[in-house]
Image 1: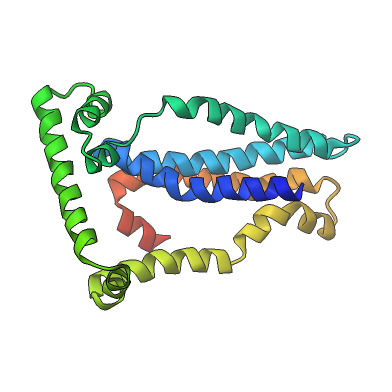
Image 2 (image 1 turned 135 degrees about the vertical axis):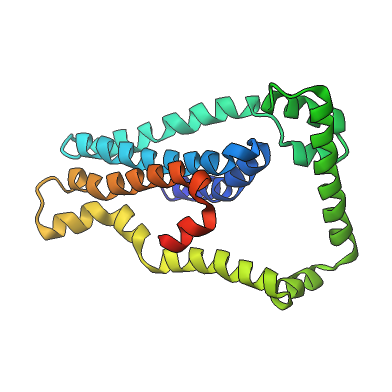
Length: 225
């Protein structure tokens, strides 16, 4: 179980960083926010389903074995589907694979003309060249220093890291992971089922944010919530 938890930690930690970045690079700009929101909604939706499965097997002999075993089903399914995902166009262009990038962009923008695809490729290539110039001339220490000395970079750094730190320090994950234990201490007869209240509310609000993020705006939504 300990080794399994370690492996799951590697997978979840990697996915939490890589998946939003991949979606941001591969999704059309007009639905980018909604697509990243869909990723978050999939996570919270999975938590709701897992609570439901937990409630179903809570009083079954050795029910925890079924809970752990069923957790492998979506992981195996995802592992089988991942090879069908194309590489992000930006990554391909960054390594000089322009033709492969154009093929992927044509799939993303199915109604685009070849000229439009080439223009999009050129736009991404220009951004990649700029990134290479910055990366090539600056040392790692200089990049870290730039993050803290440039006011615009510092504001973004404080906002992004601060939000993550505060969300963890608020203890919400403790409530998510141990809600069944906490509700059992309060006195509920089926605490796992009651835990659906927490997971369900989290899921609904993720859906609301996903629908509002593109028309309402990221900054405005963040400030309001």
